[in-house]
Structure formats: structure tokens, C-alpha cells
Length: 250
Length: 263
Image (tube, rainbow over all chains, first blue to last red; front, side, top):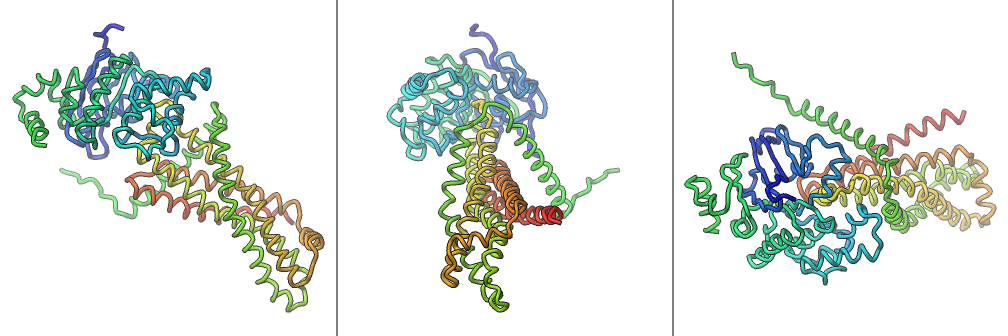
């Protein structure tokens, strides 16, 4: 696929919850195999943005085009087909806590690849677990895993359907610095190994610098600056400089 | 001229919210019937839920059913013996157990045990985004979580009701046997003399309706849980209260309908 091809295109997006106007005219374009980091303070609507992209939330106004399809116009079946091409890594991993790691990974796979034999399902599970470096946890329950391990398994569960797009919601939140670096490396590894296009939602500048080809700064429901990490943070905008200083102090 | 928007008072807000909730519940039930007949069918999950609802409730049902039969017989004896009518005890107990006690006791126990469990489980899945995770992996969470659970309660509660009836009758028999030395066969012959097909059929219908109510209320409350762990507790609690309330309403309606068919 052409690397310049636009995979995700968001135009003039608005979303409110009652009196809380979260997104107020968001525009964003994500190219093929590009990692775009959406930076912003907590509560600025970063997670809302990616939930709209995968159709979990409906926008009040504006359009979201994913792999050439207008998300708003899709019927239930078409939306399911689109979702098979999108992997969503949740902030708290959202592993099914009544299932083992193996069952968590098999859950989407057996439902979408009914032709696969048991041994093929097992091979696929081992392949993605190996990719995230956690093959030894295959029979463990989510409650027995550390925060970093849960994030990795969450990413593995999305990778098992071989998505074209990965959406990461705060991949490093609540993790220690060393585990955060491991997750950042994993995000880069996933991009190269699985050829994915990604949107990474974070307020962690290390994560943004390490994983982002492009950074978009969300403030008051709008992107106030987009570009490479250095371009964004060399801006004189006081809001961006305050955000940088806050992270530095932290 | 500036017109101020009319502020709704708390009472009218509550009425609005009640009707909105009612409409949302109606949509939820309609969606259940729509999804019920649509493939793919989650057969494995339905069987697993039947095991959870049926087998795991057996101990509690056995205990409560047995005690209900025993105590009901014990309490009825003095009134009947005043008229020298203790020989009517087996048929009186059988009528009470089969017509009312077995379906009601089973439903109330299951509303507490199964309904709260369903609401708490789905509620915690909702607040930890596990339901969203299912949806984004293109799996229909309604089909997997709701349809399987509601089907399981609708199928298993009638079976549990039959079992409760049997255990309660055994409790009654022990009491009658201790006092009158009535044999097992005589007791059951006397007990079933006054039972008609309509009694058994209406009890079965009742328990199917109760099972559906427990499942759908538990799922609805769990599926719409919000505000973190506090919301999960609230969902479980409301599920039990609402299920029990609806069970009593349904009891009145079904008894009225059955009685009108009796004459």
C-alpha cells in the first residue's frame, strides 16, 4: 500500500456530553504505517476521539473516514467488518477476567476464523504471545499478571486478528518508567513487525517522542499544533510550553 | 426580552428519567428477541451459563425447598387437627407447594443468587471496558453475554422449580410420616389426588416467566452500570429488588388468569 495514502481522515469533528463540549472541530489525517501521537491533558477528549474512530461513540457533527469508509454511514455488519481491521488497546487493558490468557486471545480468533483448526488457533496464540514476550503466561489468569504484562496481553489480543490500524489508549499510564519504555519499544516493534498504522493517546512525553512519527496537541477540543515532536515543542505557544514544563517537572 | 429556560423540578426530572428508563428497558427486551434467532449461536456459553445457574444453585435450593415443605406442614398441622382433618394434610401441602411455594421460593432464591450475580458480573465488565473490548473486536457482546444468560435462567429456573417442589414434598412427607406413620406411596397418592394438569402447567409457565424476568433484569442493570465499583453494587442491588418486585406482580397476574381458567 502507498505510504502516502491516508488511512484515517477526521474532518471537523464535534462531540459533547451534555454541557461538556469535548471535541470542538477536530481535524486529523493519518498516513499509512504512520504512528500519530495525540497529546493532551486528562479530560481533553483524547480517548473520546479514538472511541469515535472505532464506532464505539457517535460524533455530534463531522466525518471520520477509516480505510476509505465513512464510519457514521456504516450499518452494523459493515462496522463489524471495519472493526476487524482495527485493534484497540484499552487504558486498563480490559482483559476478560473470567478467562485465562489463552482464552482471552482465542476469544476473538475462534469467532472470526471458524475454519481454523485447534492446533492452528494454538499456533496463532503462541505467535502473538511470543511477539509481546509473554509466552510463559499462557495459562495464567489476568489477575495474576502485573500492570505491564496486562498491557502486553491486551496488545497481543488485538494483534491476533492482524489489524491494519492500532489504537492505543494511554499505553504507559500507571506503569513504572522501565516498563513504560518496554511498552514504547513494543509499540514500535508492532508497527514494524505487523505493518500497522497507529494512533497513540497519551500525556507521556517520553512515549510521544519514542513512538510518534507525528504528534498532535489537543487543547480545548481542538488540535492546536501538529508536526514532528521537535516541531511541536519548538513552538512558542504558551499552552504547549506549559505542557512540556509540567512533564519535565514530573 | 430574555426568556429564561424553564428549570425542571426534581420530581418532574425523576418522572422523565423513569419513562426514559422504561423505554430503554423495552428496547433491551426487543433486542433480546431480535438477537435470539440471529446466528451465530453461542451454544457453549449457553451450556456454561445453564451450569452456573442450575447446578450451582442446587445446594441453596435443596436447603430452602426442604425447610419450606417441612415448616409449612408443621405449621398447618395444628389448624387441621382442630377439625380432625390431618388426613387432608398431604393434599393441602401439595396444592400449596405446587401452585405457589415451589415457583415463588425458587424465583426469590434465584433472584437473590443468580440475578445479583449476573448484574454484578456484567456491571464490572461494563465499568472495566470489557464489554467495549468485545465490541471493538467485532464480537456482539449482547449475544454473548445477554442472550446466553437470559436463555439459561429461562430454561433452568423451571427445572429448579420442579426440583424444589420435589424436595419440599419430601420435607412434608418426613413430617407427616413422623406423626401419622403414613407410607411414602400413600402420602404421594393423597398429595396428587387434588392436583390437576392446570396446576402443574401454570407453575411451569410461572417459572419460565420468573426465569426470564430474573435474567433480563440482571442483564439490563449490569449492562447499564456506570460510576465505577459503586455503580456495580447499585446494579446488583437494584437487580434483586426489581426482580422480586416484578415476580410478585407476575404472580398476581398469572394466578388471576389461572383462576379464571379453573372455573
